[in-house]
Length: 77
Image (cartoon, rainbow, N blue to C red; front, side, top):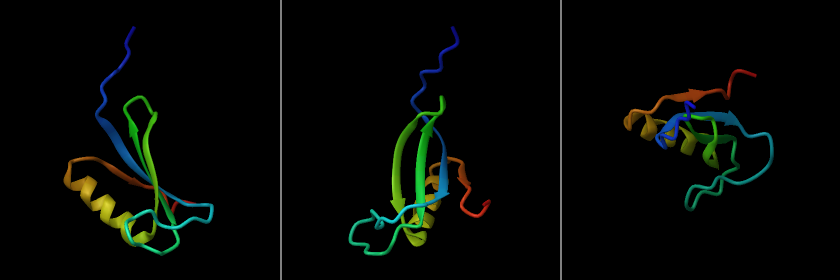
């Protein structure tokens, strides 16, 4: 069996938020327009958070700085 049990995260995916909710960044009252998802190498979600565009860019830059690949799928629709 070739199970990959490595917990290191794979790419961070940015998707357009299709439902109404607020940005989950501290003290932000903007509407969330982006869903940021971290997934493991197997494809399971590790974390998902809804963010406004400004905070989504902050998260993307932070994760790029950590050496993770950021896949922006917000504008592909």
